[in-house]
Length: 285
Image (cartoon, rainbow, N blue to C red):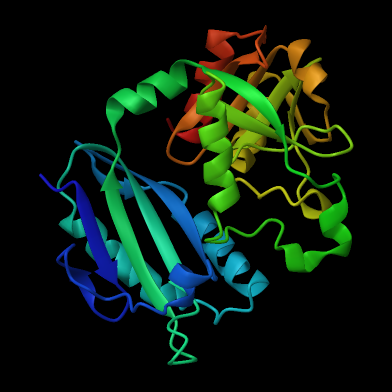
C-alpha cells in the first residue's frame, strides 16, 4: 500500500523520488508560498476528500493574500482527482496542496504540487482522546492584523517556523499542544488548529479578520451544524480563564479532528465526551 503520493500540476502523479523543486524556489528559501490541507478517507464506499471546495476557496484566498498567481482551480481539481484515483491505502490521509512563487532565477513560474500522506491512526486516536495544552503568547494584540494586512493574517503561508517552534515548546513543557494568546490577553488558535468553546448554551469560535486567526474549514462546518444539537453558534473573543469555566473546549483541525482540551496550563478543563462526539459527527469524523 502507498504511504505517500506526489503529484505535480501539469505533470500528474510522479514517483515520490522525482526531483521537481529547484534549489532557489522561494517557497523553500523564504517560505514565500501558501498551502492548504484536506482530509482524505478511503473506506468501503471509496475515496473522498472532505469539504474539498471550501479548502480550494481558502487556498485561492491565501494565494491572493500573498499576491501569488490565482490558482487554476479546475486544473487543481483534475490533479486531485488523479491523485485520489491512484490512492490505495485504507483509512485517513492528509492531502496537502502547495503553491510557491517558484524559482528566483525564473520569475513568473510558480511551483504547484500536492502531497497525499497516510495518517498514523494511533497518533490521531491519542489526540482525539484529549490534549494537555499550554498557552503561549503570539506576540501581537488581538486587533493588530486589521491595520497590518501585510502580516498575512488568515493566510496559510508556508512560513511555519514559529508554529513548529511553539509545538516544540509545548513538548518541552510536558504538554501536547499550544493555545496562542494575544498580548491583550485573549485566546486565539493553536499552531495548526482552531479553537471552539461551549459555554452557556453557545458554541463559540474566535473571530477572524483583525485577529489574524485562520478561517478554519472544520470550525465553520461545525458552527453551521451547532443549532442541530442545541447550541447557539457565534464568534467572540474569550480569555483563557473562560475555558476553565466552560462546558468544553476543543482544538479543531482538518486531519486531526475534534480534540478536547483536557488541561490548560495544568488546570483541568471541563469535558463532555458526548458533546465531543456530536461535534465530531457534525464535521464528518
